[in-house]
View (cartoon, rainbow over the protein chains, first blue to last red):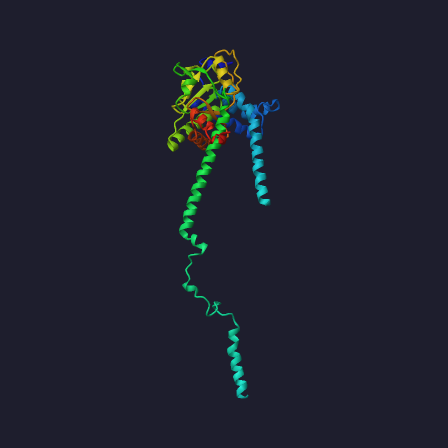
Length: 100
Length: 269
Protein backbone atom coordinates (compact mmCIF):
# COMPACT_ATOMS: atom_id res chain seq x y z
CA UNK A 1 0.00 0.00 0.00
CA UNK A 2 1.86 2.98 -1.30
CA UNK A 3 -0.53 5.34 0.40
CA UNK A 4 0.36 4.23 3.87
CA UNK A 5 4.08 4.53 3.43
CA UNK A 6 3.62 8.30 3.35
CA UNK A 7 1.77 8.03 6.66
CA UNK A 8 4.78 6.66 8.52
CA UNK A 9 5.37 10.00 10.16
CA UNK A 10 2.17 10.48 12.13
CA UNK A 11 1.35 14.03 11.18
CA UNK A 12 -2.21 15.19 10.76
CA UNK A 13 -3.02 17.07 7.57
CA UNK A 14 -2.66 20.82 8.01
CA UNK A 15 -4.95 23.48 6.62
CA UNK A 16 -3.41 23.69 3.16
CA UNK A 17 -3.39 19.90 2.82
CA UNK A 18 -6.99 19.76 3.94
CA UNK A 19 -8.01 22.40 1.46
CA UNK A 20 -6.14 20.66 -1.34
CA UNK A 21 -7.94 17.43 -0.47
CA UNK A 22 -11.35 19.13 -0.44
CA UNK A 23 -10.61 20.75 -3.77
CA UNK A 24 -9.69 17.46 -5.41
CA UNK A 25 -12.75 15.90 -3.85
CA UNK A 26 -14.98 18.59 -5.32
CA UNK A 27 -13.42 18.16 -8.77
CA UNK A 28 -13.95 14.41 -8.61
CA UNK A 29 -17.55 14.83 -7.38
CA UNK A 30 -18.29 17.30 -10.15
CA UNK A 31 -17.14 14.70 -12.61
CA UNK A 32 -19.47 12.20 -10.95
CA UNK A 33 -22.28 14.72 -11.29
CA UNK A 34 -21.62 14.88 -15.01
CA UNK A 35 -22.02 11.11 -15.42
CA UNK A 36 -24.95 10.96 -12.96
CA UNK A 37 -23.24 8.82 -10.37
CA UNK A 38 -24.60 9.27 -6.87
CA UNK A 39 -22.78 6.54 -5.00
CA UNK A 40 -19.16 6.21 -6.12
CA UNK A 41 -18.81 2.98 -4.10
CA UNK A 42 -21.58 1.25 -6.03
CA UNK A 43 -20.13 -1.81 -7.77
CA UNK A 44 -22.21 -1.29 -10.91
CA UNK A 45 -20.77 2.13 -11.69
CA UNK A 46 -17.08 1.33 -11.25
CA UNK A 47 -16.59 0.87 -14.99
CA UNK A 48 -18.32 4.16 -15.71
CA UNK A 49 -16.15 6.01 -13.20
CA UNK A 50 -12.99 4.41 -14.55
CA UNK A 51 -13.91 5.41 -18.05
CA UNK A 52 -14.89 9.03 -17.36
CA UNK A 53 -13.33 10.19 -14.08
CA UNK A 54 -10.25 8.05 -13.54
CA UNK A 55 -7.93 11.06 -13.68
CA UNK A 56 -9.99 12.99 -11.11
CA UNK A 57 -10.27 9.91 -8.91
CA UNK A 58 -6.53 9.37 -8.96
CA UNK A 59 -5.89 12.99 -8.01
CA UNK A 60 -8.47 12.75 -5.21
CA UNK A 61 -6.77 9.64 -3.82
CA UNK A 62 -3.39 11.31 -4.10
CA UNK A 63 -4.43 14.46 -2.20
CA UNK A 64 -6.42 12.77 0.58
CA UNK A 65 -5.48 9.97 2.94
CA UNK A 66 -7.31 6.70 2.31
CA UNK A 67 -9.63 7.00 5.30
CA UNK A 68 -10.79 10.42 4.12
CA UNK A 69 -11.37 9.18 0.59
CA UNK A 70 -13.54 6.40 1.99
CA UNK A 71 -15.33 8.82 4.32
CA UNK A 72 -16.15 11.31 1.57
CA UNK A 73 -17.24 8.62 -0.87
CA UNK A 74 -19.54 7.13 1.73
CA UNK A 75 -20.88 10.54 2.63
CA UNK A 76 -21.73 11.63 -0.91
CA UNK A 77 -25.05 9.76 -1.32
CA UNK A 78 -26.25 11.10 2.03
CA UNK A 79 -25.29 14.66 1.18
CA UNK A 80 -27.08 14.45 -2.17
CA UNK A 81 -30.16 13.01 -0.49
CA UNK A 82 -30.08 15.70 2.18
CA UNK A 83 -29.74 18.44 -0.39
CA UNK A 84 -32.65 16.99 -2.36
CA UNK A 85 -34.91 16.86 0.70
CA UNK A 86 -34.02 20.42 1.65
CA UNK A 87 -34.66 21.63 -1.89
CA UNK A 88 -38.02 19.87 -2.02
CA UNK A 89 -38.99 21.31 1.34
CA UNK A 90 -38.07 24.81 0.15
CA UNK A 91 -40.07 24.32 -3.06
CA UNK A 92 -43.08 23.08 -1.12
CA UNK A 93 -42.88 26.05 1.15
CA UNK A 94 -42.68 28.39 -1.82
CA UNK A 95 -45.68 26.68 -3.45
CA UNK A 96 -47.66 26.86 -0.23
CA UNK A 97 -47.01 30.58 -0.13
CA UNK A 98 -48.17 31.01 -3.71
CA UNK A 99 -51.38 29.04 -2.93
CA UNK A 100 -52.12 31.40 -0.12
CA UNK B 1 -102.07 89.15 -4.97
CA UNK B 2 -103.19 90.84 -1.85
CA UNK B 3 -100.89 92.39 0.64
CA UNK B 4 -101.68 89.69 3.15
CA UNK B 5 -100.69 87.03 0.78
CA UNK B 6 -97.41 88.73 0.14
CA UNK B 7 -96.72 89.01 3.86
CA UNK B 8 -97.42 85.38 4.54
CA UNK B 9 -95.12 84.40 1.70
CA UNK B 10 -92.38 86.54 3.15
CA UNK B 11 -92.91 85.01 6.55
CA UNK B 12 -92.69 81.53 5.13
CA UNK B 13 -89.41 82.21 3.41
CA UNK B 14 -88.11 83.75 6.58
CA UNK B 15 -89.34 80.89 8.76
CA UNK B 16 -87.88 78.15 6.61
CA UNK B 17 -84.17 78.57 7.50
CA UNK B 18 -85.13 78.50 11.17
CA UNK B 19 -86.15 74.86 10.80
CA UNK B 20 -82.52 73.92 10.29
CA UNK B 21 -80.51 72.88 13.33
CA UNK B 22 -79.01 75.89 15.02
CA UNK B 23 -75.25 76.04 14.88
CA UNK B 24 -75.03 76.26 18.60
CA UNK B 25 -77.21 73.95 20.59
CA UNK B 26 -76.56 75.67 23.85
CA UNK B 27 -79.84 76.93 25.10
CA UNK B 28 -79.79 80.61 25.28
CA UNK B 29 -79.87 81.76 28.85
CA UNK B 30 -78.41 78.49 30.21
CA UNK B 31 -75.39 78.33 32.53
CA UNK B 32 -72.36 80.06 31.15
CA UNK B 33 -69.99 77.15 30.36
CA UNK B 34 -67.20 79.33 29.25
CA UNK B 35 -66.78 80.54 32.80
CA UNK B 36 -66.73 77.04 34.34
CA UNK B 37 -63.36 75.60 35.27
CA UNK B 38 -62.55 71.94 34.55
CA UNK B 39 -61.17 71.35 38.05
CA UNK B 40 -63.58 68.60 38.99
CA UNK B 41 -63.25 66.77 35.70
CA UNK B 42 -61.33 63.36 35.89
CA UNK B 43 -60.04 63.96 32.35
CA UNK B 44 -57.70 66.40 34.06
CA UNK B 45 -55.16 63.61 34.74
CA UNK B 46 -54.80 62.77 31.08
CA UNK B 47 -52.70 65.73 30.16
CA UNK B 48 -49.94 64.97 27.69
CA UNK B 49 -47.36 65.13 30.44
CA UNK B 50 -49.01 62.42 32.44
CA UNK B 51 -49.31 60.24 29.36
CA UNK B 52 -45.61 60.61 28.72
CA UNK B 53 -44.74 59.74 32.32
CA UNK B 54 -47.06 56.74 32.23
CA UNK B 55 -45.58 55.39 29.01
CA UNK B 56 -42.02 55.82 30.25
CA UNK B 57 -42.65 54.11 33.57
CA UNK B 58 -44.69 51.39 31.95
CA UNK B 59 -42.09 50.49 29.38
CA UNK B 60 -39.30 50.70 31.95
CA UNK B 61 -41.11 48.27 34.23
CA UNK B 62 -41.95 45.92 31.36
CA UNK B 63 -38.33 45.94 30.32
CA UNK B 64 -37.08 45.22 33.83
CA UNK B 65 -39.54 42.40 34.38
CA UNK B 66 -39.00 40.66 31.06
CA UNK B 67 -35.27 41.01 31.56
CA UNK B 68 -35.42 39.50 35.02
CA UNK B 69 -37.71 36.76 33.79
CA UNK B 70 -35.27 35.86 31.05
CA UNK B 71 -32.41 35.84 33.55
CA UNK B 72 -34.34 33.56 35.88
CA UNK B 73 -35.15 31.23 33.02
CA UNK B 74 -31.52 30.99 31.95
CA UNK B 75 -30.37 30.50 35.52
CA UNK B 76 -32.91 27.78 36.10
CA UNK B 77 -31.81 26.03 32.93
CA UNK B 78 -28.17 26.25 33.95
CA UNK B 79 -29.06 24.94 37.38
CA UNK B 80 -30.87 21.99 35.86
CA UNK B 81 -27.88 21.28 33.65
CA UNK B 82 -25.58 21.33 36.63
CA UNK B 83 -27.70 18.75 38.38
CA UNK B 84 -27.90 17.92 42.03
CA UNK B 85 -24.76 16.75 43.77
CA UNK B 86 -22.75 14.94 41.14
CA UNK B 87 -22.63 16.94 37.90
CA UNK B 88 -24.48 15.46 34.94
CA UNK B 89 -21.78 16.63 32.57
CA UNK B 90 -18.18 17.35 33.39
CA UNK B 91 -16.14 16.33 36.37
CA UNK B 92 -12.54 15.56 37.17
CA UNK B 93 -10.08 14.73 34.43
CA UNK B 94 -6.36 14.38 34.27
CA UNK B 95 -4.81 15.23 30.92
CA UNK B 96 -1.71 16.93 29.53
CA UNK B 97 -1.45 20.02 27.37
CA UNK B 98 0.66 20.51 24.26
CA UNK B 99 3.70 21.35 26.41
CA UNK B 100 3.34 18.08 28.29
CA UNK B 101 2.20 19.85 31.46
CA UNK B 102 -0.70 18.38 33.42
CA UNK B 103 -4.10 19.96 32.91
CA UNK B 104 -7.00 19.01 35.16
CA UNK B 105 -10.46 20.30 36.01
CA UNK B 106 -8.70 22.70 38.43
CA UNK B 107 -7.44 24.60 35.38
CA UNK B 108 -11.04 25.38 34.44
CA UNK B 109 -11.45 27.51 37.54
CA UNK B 110 -11.30 31.28 37.46
CA UNK B 111 -12.82 31.84 34.02
CA UNK B 112 -15.39 30.57 31.61
CA UNK B 113 -14.18 27.79 29.37
CA UNK B 114 -15.43 26.31 26.14
CA UNK B 115 -14.49 22.70 25.46
CA UNK B 116 -14.48 20.88 22.14
CA UNK B 117 -13.76 17.21 21.52
CA UNK B 118 -12.26 16.18 18.21
CA UNK B 119 -9.22 14.61 16.58
CA UNK B 120 -6.52 15.97 14.34
CA UNK B 121 -7.17 13.57 11.45
CA UNK B 122 -10.78 14.70 11.28
CA UNK B 123 -11.73 15.12 7.63
CA UNK B 124 -14.28 17.91 7.52
CA UNK B 125 -16.40 18.71 10.55
CA UNK B 126 -13.79 19.38 13.25
CA UNK B 127 -11.79 21.91 11.20
CA UNK B 128 -15.02 23.76 10.37
CA UNK B 129 -16.08 23.76 13.98
CA UNK B 130 -12.66 24.93 15.16
CA UNK B 131 -12.75 27.76 12.62
CA UNK B 132 -16.16 28.67 14.00
CA UNK B 133 -14.71 28.57 17.51
CA UNK B 134 -12.16 31.17 16.41
CA UNK B 135 -14.96 33.44 15.16
CA UNK B 136 -16.89 32.94 18.40
CA UNK B 137 -13.86 33.81 20.52
CA UNK B 138 -13.04 36.93 18.51
CA UNK B 139 -16.68 38.01 18.41
CA UNK B 140 -17.15 37.66 22.16
CA UNK B 141 -13.97 39.60 22.78
CA UNK B 142 -14.70 42.48 20.41
CA UNK B 143 -18.45 42.76 21.01
CA UNK B 144 -18.81 42.05 24.72
CA UNK B 145 -15.24 41.92 26.03
CA UNK B 146 -15.77 38.34 27.18
CA UNK B 147 -12.73 36.09 27.09
CA UNK B 148 -13.19 32.36 27.22
CA UNK B 149 -10.59 29.69 27.77
CA UNK B 150 -10.95 27.50 24.69
CA UNK B 151 -9.96 23.85 25.09
CA UNK B 152 -9.58 21.15 22.46
CA UNK B 153 -9.58 17.58 23.78
CA UNK B 154 -8.63 14.78 21.44
CA UNK B 155 -10.67 11.59 21.19
CA UNK B 156 -7.79 9.92 19.42
CA UNK B 157 -4.96 9.70 21.96
CA UNK B 158 -3.10 7.01 20.05
CA UNK B 159 -2.20 9.34 17.20
CA UNK B 160 -2.65 12.76 18.79
CA UNK B 161 0.49 13.30 20.83
CA UNK B 162 1.04 16.75 22.38
CA UNK B 163 3.36 17.53 19.48
CA UNK B 164 0.80 16.55 16.83
CA UNK B 165 -1.92 18.60 18.52
CA UNK B 166 0.38 21.59 18.84
CA UNK B 167 1.13 21.46 15.15
CA UNK B 168 -2.55 21.00 14.30
CA UNK B 169 -3.78 23.91 16.41
CA UNK B 170 -1.40 26.32 14.68
CA UNK B 171 -4.04 26.56 11.95
CA UNK B 172 -6.65 27.83 14.36
CA UNK B 173 -7.21 30.51 17.01
CA UNK B 174 -3.94 30.99 18.93
CA UNK B 175 -5.57 30.81 22.35
CA UNK B 176 -6.89 27.24 21.96
CA UNK B 177 -5.38 24.84 24.47
CA UNK B 178 -4.94 21.30 23.16
CA UNK B 179 -5.21 18.36 25.54
CA UNK B 180 -4.42 14.70 25.27
CA UNK B 181 -3.69 11.85 27.66
CA UNK B 182 -3.53 8.11 27.81
CA UNK B 183 -6.35 6.07 26.42
CA UNK B 184 -8.10 5.43 29.72
CA UNK B 185 -7.95 9.05 30.86
CA UNK B 186 -9.38 10.24 27.55
CA UNK B 187 -12.05 7.57 27.70
CA UNK B 188 -13.00 8.59 31.23
CA UNK B 189 -13.08 12.26 30.27
CA UNK B 190 -15.22 11.61 27.22
CA UNK B 191 -17.56 9.54 29.33
CA UNK B 192 -17.88 12.35 31.87
CA UNK B 193 -18.75 14.78 29.10
CA UNK B 194 -21.12 12.30 27.48
CA UNK B 195 -19.00 12.27 24.35
CA UNK B 196 -19.41 9.18 22.25
CA UNK B 197 -16.31 8.11 20.41
CA UNK B 198 -15.22 5.03 18.57
CA UNK B 199 -11.44 5.07 18.80
CA UNK B 200 -10.04 1.57 18.82
CA UNK B 201 -7.82 0.85 21.81
CA UNK B 202 -4.90 -0.83 20.09
CA UNK B 203 -3.89 0.92 16.93
CA UNK B 204 -0.50 0.70 15.32
CA UNK B 205 1.29 3.98 14.80
CA UNK B 206 0.73 5.31 11.34
CA UNK B 207 -2.50 3.43 10.90
CA UNK B 208 -5.11 5.30 8.91
CA UNK B 209 -8.57 5.39 10.44
CA UNK B 210 -11.31 7.82 11.36
CA UNK B 211 -12.90 8.38 14.74
CA UNK B 212 -16.62 8.70 14.99
CA UNK B 213 -17.47 11.10 17.76
CA UNK B 214 -20.19 13.47 18.88
CA UNK B 215 -19.66 17.14 18.18
CA UNK B 216 -20.60 19.73 20.75
CA UNK B 217 -19.15 22.77 22.40
CA UNK B 218 -19.40 22.65 26.18
CA UNK B 219 -19.62 25.93 28.05
CA UNK B 220 -18.17 25.66 31.57
CA UNK B 221 -18.48 28.23 34.35
CA UNK B 222 -15.53 29.66 36.34
CA UNK B 223 -16.07 26.97 38.99
CA UNK B 224 -15.51 24.27 36.40
CA UNK B 225 -19.17 23.32 36.25
CA UNK B 226 -21.15 22.68 33.12
CA UNK B 227 -23.53 25.42 31.96
CA UNK B 228 -24.67 24.66 28.46
CA UNK B 229 -23.99 22.77 25.28
CA UNK B 230 -23.89 24.17 21.74
CA UNK B 231 -24.49 21.89 18.80
CA UNK B 232 -23.57 22.31 15.17
CA UNK B 233 -26.84 24.07 14.36
CA UNK B 234 -25.57 27.30 15.91
CA UNK B 235 -23.65 29.58 13.63
CA UNK B 236 -21.00 31.86 15.10
CA UNK B 237 -23.37 34.80 15.69
CA UNK B 238 -26.01 32.68 17.42
CA UNK B 239 -23.37 30.98 19.52
CA UNK B 240 -21.96 34.36 20.57
CA UNK B 241 -25.40 35.54 21.69
CA UNK B 242 -26.11 32.33 23.56
CA UNK B 243 -22.77 32.37 25.35
CA UNK B 244 -23.06 36.06 26.13
CA UNK B 245 -26.47 35.64 27.78
CA UNK B 246 -25.25 32.63 29.77
CA UNK B 247 -22.16 34.49 30.93
CA UNK B 248 -24.10 37.62 31.91
CA UNK B 249 -26.57 35.78 34.17
CA UNK B 250 -23.92 33.65 35.85
CA UNK B 251 -23.83 33.56 39.65
CA UNK B 252 -21.23 31.63 41.66
CA UNK B 253 -22.46 28.55 43.50
CA UNK B 254 -22.51 30.23 46.93
CA UNK B 255 -24.62 33.08 45.57
CA UNK B 256 -26.98 30.67 43.84
CA UNK B 257 -27.52 28.73 47.04
CA UNK B 258 -28.11 31.90 48.99
CA UNK B 259 -30.68 33.01 46.44
CA UNK B 260 -32.37 29.64 46.65
CA UNK B 261 -32.56 29.79 50.43
CA UNK B 262 -33.79 33.39 50.44
CA UNK B 263 -37.40 34.53 50.42
CA UNK B 264 -37.43 34.64 46.62
CA UNK B 265 -36.12 31.07 46.49
CA UNK B 266 -39.34 29.73 45.02
CA UNK B 267 -38.43 31.49 41.79
CA UNK B 268 -35.54 29.10 41.31
CA UNK B 269 -37.51 25.93 41.90
